[in-house]
Length: 147
Image 1 (cartoon, rainbow, N blue to C red):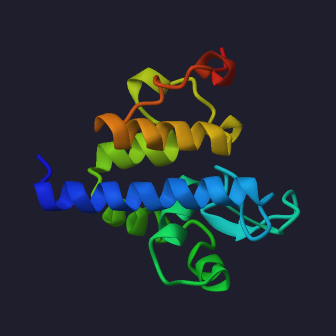
Image 2 (image 1 turned 90 degrees about the vertical axis):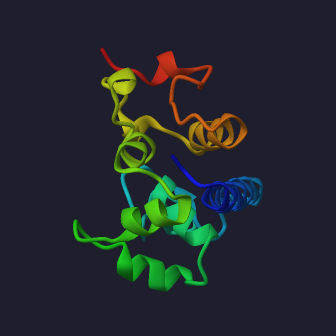
């Protein structure tokens, strides 16, 4: 069970992340794009040249690290971006798997490379509003699921 203090910190971090993601989308992703396949990396698929997944966005929105520093710590399989994001959001290991890897019994066929920033924002907003972390809350989940 999460303490009231940790819940308040989680909600603050969620709100900052959602706000930062929405602002970036509105500005046309000038500094940072969205890509569930990258913790935090240079990405030529985005006009800005850099992209991050949900965990990368959480760390970006809730730390004082600049994008080049985040790229350095986000490199390769040894990245500590997911651990930092898990700590910032006060997530259990199971919750982190659900959020960062779309891994749970309800999402067994969800290819996270199809997840867009709108999907990510929807999941984060649902988590903030209800305290329940689930991809089932997405109205267009069926469009993401592969058979």
